[in-house]
Length: 237
Image 1 (cartoon, rainbow, N blue to C red):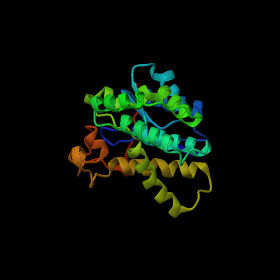
Image 2 (image 1 turned 90 degrees about the vertical axis):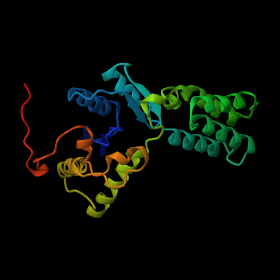
Image 3 (image 1 turned 60 degrees about the horizontal axis):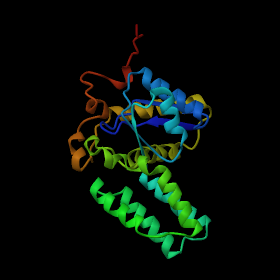
Image 4 (image 1 turned 135 degrees about the vertical axis):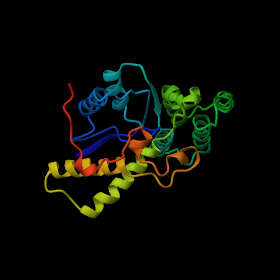
């Protein structure tokens, strides 16, 4: 089974999470439906290369949000394509991947445009280079969303989510296994709740203001007098 979890970039909070058999289209649609039901406004979706994730989100939210593909996952995919094509040591293929990396990981749109112009001035005719170029052209718009909308502060990788899952995996390894999926589900709910109530301690840069605040507090929720072990759920009208 897999744990489908959404991480809010601005606050580091986990607005919704669910245990599913797989990361199928149906599971993802159900995830986004619940996310919308609880009132979460989706403005930007940062995701890896699974095309079902933005498709599922659009089925629920329409087109009223931006998509940013993880540049790290995309570049890793290009390198795998080069290996499969037997071109992982070809200087021209390596140069092409490096140029694409400079474009999609540029500091701003102006820098990206300069590298894009340099790319257009070159001629890549090998089958592996054509394959890589076609892949880049198909996804270029969603790979540069963070550059097209700098005022939104969009991350260009899924590193935050990857870090979250690494923390969780360390916990799960110490447990070994669960005897029933319900036990796993309850544990994951408890861990997520603990994570939402635990203050940040090592945020740096622009996120330094998060330190000493829990994700829920960063989302403007008051935790004064709230015991995470004694939370009651009220029926909504």
